[in-house]
Every structure is written in structure tokens, then in C-alpha cells.
Length: 77
Image (cartoon, rainbow, N blue to C red; front, side, top):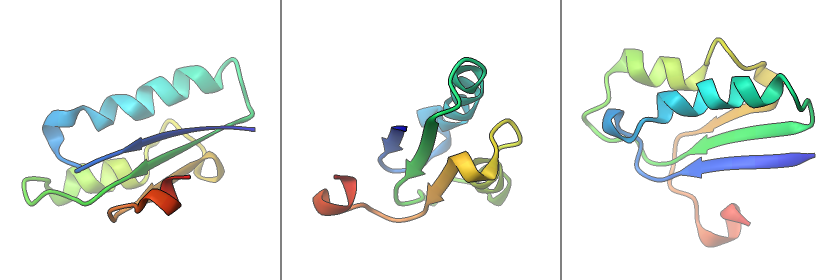
């Protein structure tokens, strides 16, 4: 199983919505990949934007995880 992780401050201008789209395309050719989006949420994020990141409609819930917090070095490993 492979893991793809995107982390950092979560705000609309970082393009994390594209992460779900790219993940969806990758899952068409590989079913052994898991995706994690993690980071502290910026105050500039709307609740709709966060909801879309929390539950992207293009990825099965068992293959995607949204972690709304800063990850320590140990947690990233």
C-alpha cells in the first residue's frame, strides 16, 4: 500500500481541492493508494471549502483521511 500525504496550512489558494482530483485519477489505475490531507486550517477557509476537503466526492472514504491539525515530525513519519 502506498500513501500520498499533503500537509501544511490549509487555505483556499494552496489548491488542495486539486489534490482530490489528482487522487481520483490515480485511483483509476492503482487501488492500493491511501491519501491524507493534513494541516492547520487558515481563518480564510470557508466552511464549504473545509467540508469539500473533508469529504471529497471523488475518493472513497476508506482511502482518504483529513487531519485538521499541525503534524509533528513524528506524526509525519
